[in-house]
Image (cartoon, rainbow, N blue to C red; front, side, top):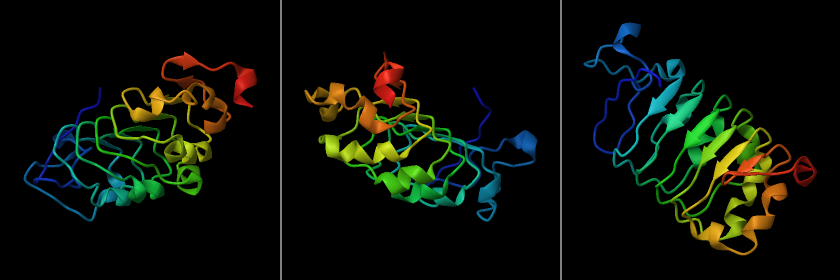
Length: 173
């Protein structure tokens, strides 16, 4: 999909991710002061427990962190250009509030499936994410709740695909 370089110390997200050697970035270099040049981060199944300094990647648009050990997303609120966030298959139980998600103005796709989200109240903050179009929650305790099927309109007026169901325009208002 995108060219990428992954440089990892155990449990850390380095600054070089998202740039390629053709961009003049050597695998031997790690300039931790250049976070704003990172446009995407691809770090699935790296055993990450924390997002580290990822909040400094203010221009990042695409982040894939599936299959790690992440429990929280709270440091991502500064990523106002973020379009896609894949944090599926982690250990997330709750999500930040509406204010947090309102700051993610460009977030259109959020993969949350295969996490430990147990309560519908844990996802209520997603209603603040006005650009969100696609959300996955399958393989979470939340999606097994009888009330889950009726929560589409509460999550956001623009949402049109939750768990591969297309929500009618009338239900999105």
